[in-house]
Image 1: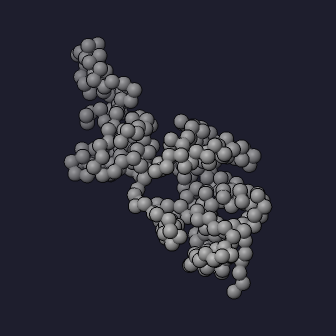
Image 2: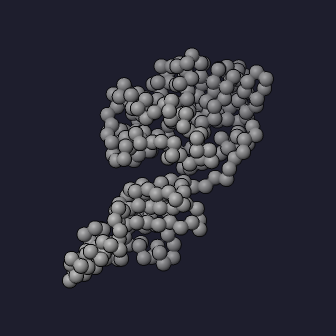
Image 3: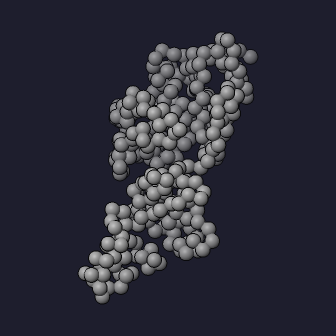
Length: 296
């Protein structure tokens, strides 16, 4: 079997892999991208409810979880959200700001995938799907990668396989295995950006409130997020909960402020002074969803 030679081999045809490949290609490198899935960018396609929240203009290094808080500073300084926005506009993709600097496609996530693939092809990048990695070896002359589609030899190897989330979209642990193989320390994995489930009496108390949404402030371990929360049949979800879940571990205290920006006790005192004859459920229904106010 013949050897496919390249300067850079990227394992993983997701957002990171395609961005890396097109950048290397534009710098004159001969680049190959391989992915075991049958199509590229599967997680991009499902992101943002199918419209891809492709960047956030308010992103800073402080928004990233890392044992080294300075790790991403240089990357964010060299390639800002506005660089990506310029590329989106150049490809004629209409978008809108939803809230807090979050930018979404007006039409479909497919536009972002097509944009990345087109940029790769324009840079001479070759993309191969249905190509699974079988073995990776490093020699004096570079990396030898054995796959279901042949043997690749590359001067540089990029592992952009993503995390373990959403196996149905093709997520595997191959990236972690390769990291261990080449001597990197791999920290224990845990879920992040996930809903939180309730059990026992807590679930029973709120189970019939499924579908209720409201703005809240969630706080845990010195971090807080102000956004919306959604009560589900299993627990709580929504942007605020998904964000704070990355900072929460079993046993940690999680505080939910249902009146963000207000002193709840002071507000209740003021309502009692101004509207002493009104029932509590009545005044609560004016600032909270009625179904939740009646339950409280």
